[in-house]
Image 1: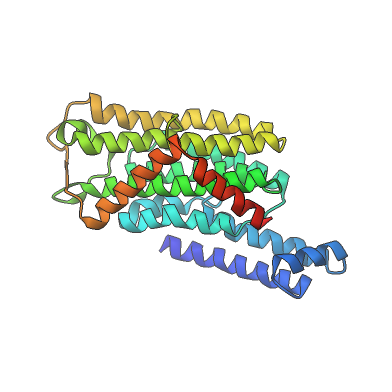
Image 2: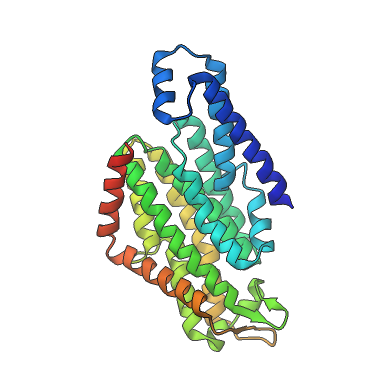
Length: 314
């Protein structure tokens, strides 16, 4: 219900912004809006109001601060397959539609999003809420890449990050669906203690995915973060690079805490079992984990593809 109501308001903001931009330019194509801006014949009030409302709608879909409050509750309450779809796809849609040039405003939002997501992730005791705040922090990293979008490197890095994060988070939620007991999914972190003793294979797989989220080398997380931060550095956004690295260090703590709980804690009476995955879950796990590995050790092909797409988008 919370997502429905807030999503309806965000969609209304987005559509109202589109209507204002149409009133300004007479069309809603990017090229026509840009031509109207260069001509300077329309109302500045319509232009800036429209852009602001469109930005609000997109930032809500991306889960960026201060439009992030729906994310933890929806991730925790929704069925895990739906949560995985939202985590992997809504950011792709939101950032795929975003061509923003509010550098000061977006930069501030990026800093707040990275820090709020990283700091609040440390306090979580539920694995799905932890991944929710992780997704908020990752929205901040994507905003860092967007600030370098006028450069081809910025577009390429952002697209690569979306691909890498999408595969990793899909595999992570696939593992979460398998850890269950008689009452259903066991998402409280205390229940994951000693899980490696019960199922070392899936514990190792989830450890690998968490290390990718943390940005450890030889994973797609490291490659994608490096690409985004390098693009920001090339665009002169050094302050965002510094904040991004610091927030990544903070965000590594809750990931490593889960790893330590799985491998170094003794299993308790309430430690759940890991169910055997079905065909679709197995496919999601295999594809997501393989993509996370390949994009970490051999990312050249996808980076070249995103570079070509960046040239096309420009």
